[in-house]
Length: 237
Image (tube, rainbow, N blue to C red; front, side, top):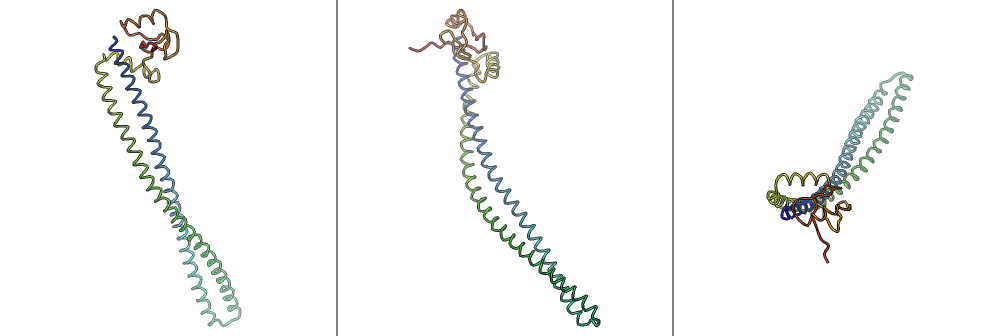
């Protein structure tokens, strides 16, 4: 029975080590996601700027078409004025030309605004792309480093898992099942040290007879309070 207890203790140590490794790996995975998320945020900003720039350029093109059409109308009206014979018609065409020139002036002001917006967006986009390139390069290096750590931990997990399988094979299947259930129920600790009459798993006092029976190693004994399998560990002098 002492040998079974020793193997169960080894099994618990391996499982706890695997738990620690998996927790570290999970933390690194979270950091990895954070790195990629930072790049994605800047990439989305670049996309938004590119979309805005395309929209402003399209608006500028529409204004340029309207501007050219208005200038053409003014030229046509000025040409037609030479053929007008009545003063009334002359004044009407004059008013149309004046209105068209006012429209041209307004369009030119809008064009200047669009050009300014395009220049500002282009500068912001260039800066943001530079930031993205720098961030992507830095993130690639950090990602590679984190992934290397994750792979190393996975290698250790695989080695510990293989060692665990070897230990578990030497223990009766029913006992391994009992150990596994206890481990799930007791936050990863299926075994508890018994010392000085106490269960160190739940810090409760053990019945004297039960505690004395631990010295005999005749059977597996469990704490009546937390149900963990007890391992006798005497206080070292």
